[in-house]
Structures are given as C-alpha cells and as structure tokens.
Amino acid sequence: MIIEQQVALQNSNSFGIMARAQRLVRLHEAADVTALLAHLRSSGAPPNKPFILGGGSNIVLTGDVKPLVVKVELKGRRLVEETPKAWVVEAAAGENWHDLVTWTLHNGYPGLENLALIPGSVGASPVQNIGAYGVELQDRFDSLDAVDLQTGQFFTLTAAQCAFGYRDSVFKHTSVANLGNATSSSGSGFGLAGRALILAVRFALPKPWKPVLGYADLEKKQLQSQTTSPTAWQIYQWVCEIRRAKLPDPALLGNAGSFFKNPTVTPEQCADIIAREPKVVHYPMLNGSVKLAAGWLIDACGWRGKSVGNAGVYEKQALVLVNRGGPADPVTGGEVMTLAKAIQTSVYERFGIMLEHEPVVI
Ligand code: EPU
Image 1 (cartoon, protein in one colour):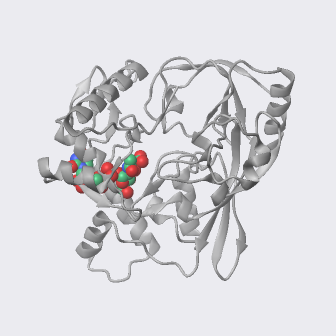
Image 2: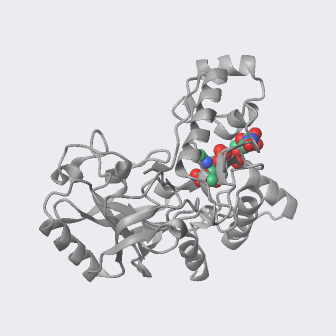
Image 3: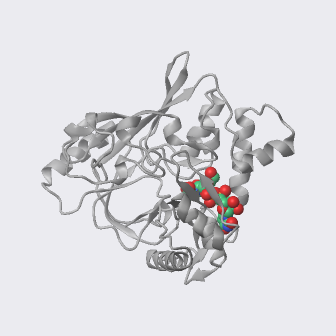
C-alpha cells in the first residue's frame, strides 16, 4: 500500500479550498481495502481515526488534514437482480453519483432521475441521505456493504439499520456501542461516523416505474412542456435544467451545495413567524411539524449576493455558499465558517431559529 505524503486537496473538495493531506491512501480495488485494514491493525490505536474522502462535495477544510486520508476510488456498476417488483442495481462507493444516475437510465432502470446532477460519490450518498425534487436516497435504497475500520469486520446494512433521516443517517453519528448491535439497531444512540468505510451501495428501483412530479419546479416544467406522461429521461432533463439554473456548477464556482439544512419548527412557532413575516416559505410535514425554507430565511436577512472575504452567498440561491477567490487565492475554510456563523446569527436574531450546517467541517 502506498501512503502518499503532503497531498494537495484543492481538486478533491468541491469548494476548491487549498489544504493538504499529510498522508493519503487511495483505494482502487478490494486488495487495497485489505492492505488498509492490515496497516491500521499494525499501526496500533491511532490518535486520529482515518478521514474518508469521497467526492469531497460536502466538506469544508479548515486546515491541513492530520488523520490518514482514505480516498475511495473503487469502481463498478451492475444489475444484480431483477424481480417483478424492482431492478436492484449495485455501484461501488467510488463511482460518481450523477454518472450512476445517467447509466441506470441508459440501461433501462429508471427511478433515480429526480436525483440527477447531485455532486459527489455513490459512497457518500447514504451518509447524508441525499435528496432532491421529492425523492430521497432512502426511497430507492436496498442495502450497502461496508467495513468497520476499527475491527476489520465486513458487514451489510439494510435501510432500517442505516437509520435514515432528513440529510441524516447512522454514518453521521458516533456512539460507544459496538458493531454487534448493528443488526438490531435502528439508530437510537448507535453511530458509525468515522468508523464505517462504505464499499458498495445497492438500489432497488421499483417496478412499475412511476414519475415523481409533486415538486413545484417540476410541475412548472411539465406545464410548460404540456406533457401528460413524461418519461424518466424527460424528468432527468428537467431536473438538470432546474439545477443548472439555480445552483452553481462546482467546476466553475466552488461550493458544497446547500450549506444549511431546512429547519423544522412546531406549527405554533410557524404561526408566530407567519404573523411577523407572512411570506415565509413553509411546508407542513406528515409528522405535524413544519419545514421552513432556509434559503428564504437567509434571503430575507439580506444575505443573497453578500461576501465575507472570498466566501460569498450565491446570487440565485441564498442556501449555497460559494468560493469567490481565484485558483491561486481560493476561499479558506475559516472564511466559509465566519460567513456561515454570521448568517446563523442574523437568522437567529430575526427568526429565533438556529440553522444547522450540512457539510462536514474538518
Ligand atoms: N428561496 C428564496 N431565496 C433564496 C433561496 C430559496 O426565497 O435565496 C425560496 C425559494 O423561492 C423556494 C424555497 O425557498 O420557495 C425553497 O427553495 P428551493 O426550491 O431551491 O429548495 P431548497 O429547500 O432551498 C432543497 C434541498 C436541495 C434540493 C432542493 C430541491 C436542502 C437543504 N436542500 O433546497 O438540495 O436540490 O430542495 O429538492 O434540503 C443540497 O442538499 O445540496 C441541495 C441542493
């Protein structure tokens, strides 16, 4: 196994932040995973857990990364099973998410089209239960294979064991429980953050395919095109158009997608905000709570288009923070977090809501 030293990470995080990995290993194939496990065993109890790097599209680097960086570059996609109820497709963790979505449609396995163009890797997709335009990863998830970096044990998790929530899963939490409990856990107090290395994910794409069009932006597209029964490809094209119009392409303008989660409040809190701010964008949830559009709250506080140093708030979507620096002078993680804190403070002072950031800060 080759441990690379002082590796530049600027091209490995979608913000384009300049930082280095003091030590980095790349996983291309199963043998690399075995070698990594042997290395971790032989190096004893490390002071820092390894840091697993996927597509780097949901991280803020605030300095050089001291723990061993494990860059997941495992590749492979295949149909593993076709039943009367679903196509089950498997992809290795290092596959690009959007390429997988495109590949499934090309091969006649629809179901992921609403999740087109989300940046990042397949291995990162269950970690934050990615979601867009009325579909969340958990709606199409079958199971995943992973390895426990502490014990070297390989395991498979079902959706219930992943404890998916809104931009949340068992992979975002730490716990003292050991892996033996994974089979009986559905999330309470159990966490695998920094411990589980996801190797492959399987998706169950339901048959017969049904379009998911409830989201307002998609309804608008359907109305414009006067199509009564769009195909999965059509929805894929619409989602790509909507995203390109609203969200910056990380290849052109560094960003980590939505920077904050949409907060949920009680109906009473929401009524109180509506009394003061009648235009607040809000969505009643099935569990009785109300979700507020964080982008709207930030926008209402006047942040859209503003900057702190090289960290900016995107002009077309206030929920997205962007890198306004050039390649030689990119935004720093410190600038991003200073801007994020200033936004949190002003939203809190005006609405009494503390926004929670989505990306992992390292
Ligand atoms: N809005 C404003 N001003 C803004 C931004 C938004 O008034 O600057 C309003 C919009 O007009 C709209 C509402 O806020 O009425 C919601 O905005 P949008 O439809 O763009 O969706 P969102 O809630 O901001 C979420 C996800 C996105 C996902 C879209 C579409 C989160 C944190 N974000 O954004 O996910 O693509 O819905 O489903 O849940 C991501 O996680 O990186 C991401 C892009």
